[in-house]
Length: 114
Image (tube, rainbow, N blue to C red; front, side, top):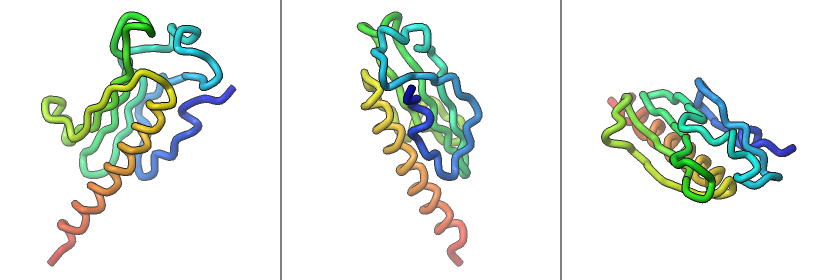
């Protein structure tokens, strides 16, 4: 069984909530019970949060939503994307992690600049 969560390096992030038990070897229809509104939350330095959830009643009608917020401001996300399959989901999560790490680095440079 190849789990999605095991395929990700969250770098400086700390997983604070994980109910993402998706298996690459099964279809979403076979894992319908695993599709939840709140699936994953990862906290990063400088107030960044990576949030992943499922929106929709059934696999045929729904999508994964991947959101990056800063300072708990859900009304103005830094990143917000919707995807429909596990392979897209892992790529978007990795893209978000890279984006967060770049933003943290930029903020640290500004913070320590004299």
